[in-house]
Image (cartoon, rainbow, N blue to C red; front, side, top):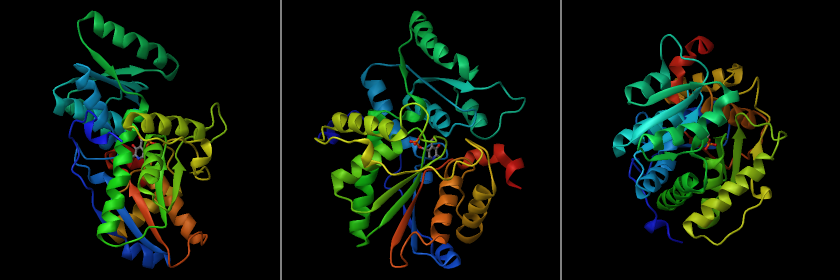
Length: 328
Ligand SMILES: Cc1ncc(COP(=O)(O)O)c(C=O)c1O
């Protein structure tokens, strides 16, 4: 493997802590619960994208880029962290956000503006065309754009989570602890793909559960195949000789509720429980849903009482402020 020699721009405060969730475990009468705090990666309110952006920005700088372009929802955590990463690296940032400009920016959108990103509002139907046009337009202006895919989910970005898994294995070794299950939110795939590659690199024996946030697994290319493609690209990028197939990915599709960003009792209960029992803030779109799934797993006795389950907190809390009406 050649991880040490890959282009990488430092952005994250690592390792992120692992903490016990003793009150929550007691309350649910569940297995031992621990949480990995990637909401504390440290870049402009943190989150999972920081790890991916270390490698994406590293490659952008290596290629001589002066501008990062990426896209997402109006409350995209990925866009907020990309705007922050660009600022830290001395790059400009252009964001294609879905929808129309609201009267008052809030949550991640407010941060995008404060972090100096230029925002282009697009309708989903025109997004692909705008994504093709914008880099050309910037090149004509003499700029050197570097395009980051949705969620930073390609082989380069997923490399951040291969390393995260190596970090986790080292931490568990250091505290002499075994983790039997890892539960996390999965959406554009880079996190899950990286975790699965990292699990193979480290020989991690626990079961990995990616809770789908928005994909139902039936439309177009199966999500597991998308994950395998990203994982194979990541393995190639780091020089790890392994081949991944759709069968290597365990995706949970039962918690899609009303769709992406539609908050229900599942997320509301999870957010309030973690907040009131552990003083930890989840987000309404990703970690609220994934923790809601974990709580439901526990109630359905999916885990044995002598097992340890790790919830990987992937961040996103800034979006809470934009979802206030759905949460109270
Ligand atoms: C807070 C949070 N958690 C989880 C995810 C899912 O990660 P991935 O897109 O790598 O599947 C995202 C993606 O935007 C996110 O913002």
